[in-house]
Length: 602
Picture 1 (spheres, rainbow, N blue to C red):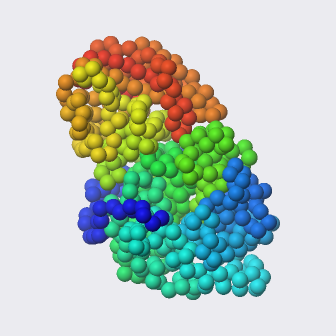
Picture 2 (picture 1 turned 180 degrees about the horizontal axis):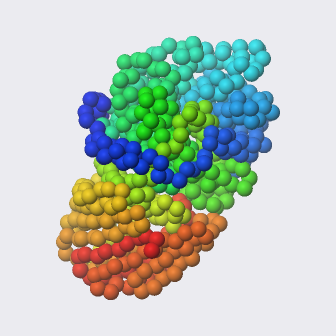
Picture 3 (picture 1 turned 90 degrees about the vertical axis):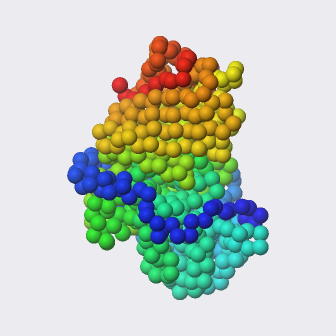
């Protein structure tokens, strides 16, 4: 990874500053306490985690080579860290008593993983991601194998040299590190704890990593992708759970608890991980959330904070429900939240594969199972009750929730992945494919939900004003579980107009958006991508003059263009491709500088 710029603006003392989310969290804890028993139980148990793991492992068991390595069924080779994540998932099935027959398979996978680490030959140079699942698998299996095998594993763990085993390292051509290194830190701490190394690597790289944190307790790397914030924080949380007492312990305790609460605020009422940016809408995101929330439920319970413990337990179960919705008939998971044949790679990143991301999800579910404390019962989570607006400026995201109706807004998009503006709309009980659940890249076009305008004969859209071309501010007017009102004001650079203000009125059943354009405007246009096909289900689109109703088998989403005047919606011939499927672009036009539209169930 040398010659890559991994730097972010350092915040070396973030843990000593006030948490900007404290005013929201103080009110929210009061709401959680008052409504402690209001949510419908998920009926998810720890054993559901085992069932999900079993489906993935059983599928990939058939793709294990004689030397223990897992071969991707589409790439026809071992890919990235599939083998060590398989080793952990299979080891937990053995340890749980569910699948004792998998002991030999788990042993072979672990043998291969340890050899690759010890010899500095980790597959695809992904040793950073090998060490944590490898150490956890070792703990499950070390007392279940013969003495010769255990001795060989111990020898491999003693031989491992981080500078040869890992890729994300500070050196002559690399001044900083990213999320890869957090996995190595976590695994190296376990290797230290089990007596195979000292703390030199952990101490060195924790010092380098702490300035990546914001005062909200969130982890940044270039592009600020949310999933790599959460994965990094989870890796650091494992250190706390395993008893880390070094000089960064106090900072980690403060920042990671803040970040855990921020994750609760970002979770959709359906349990989904927030979207946006790199690796978004991948099912392993939700498995990661499940493991992280189980860890924090345990830690909160141990600290005597039952409101938090029950909220985290609820959030873990909601995340597990998301994973279970994406089980394929063959037992493993769809990688991205659509139902296209995996061979088509619809919505995949260039680095996504059927093996590595299925088995990463299984490994996180294995960690969730290991950390789950059955003494903690579900309460309600922030996703259930809402009553807040959360602005995360370092991540260009705003989240709002009113009684289980939830918005995510992108205030300065990475154009490779999304457009600026309204990014997601989820409502409890709604089919999220009707969403919106995500938005398309704005690079080269802007078919996202939201406003466009024509000025001086040229069409522009808010969506196309990506990071570096726009700045945004959030103004909260009112926030309760019954109603949330706020304004999002965008200042545009090198645009034909000066600014765009979106005024949101969010209730448990609908969201109304009034858009005000400042500048010389000839005409405006509002766009709505209506769900058409996700690889299995076809959306039914009913269009009238000012509204459209989109039906799936289980729910309905309505979009209405409310004026001013009598604007007419029409269906274009433009098919929009998103991670979740294909969408038919609906448009409506009018004149003036102001318009209003709504989305909801009614």
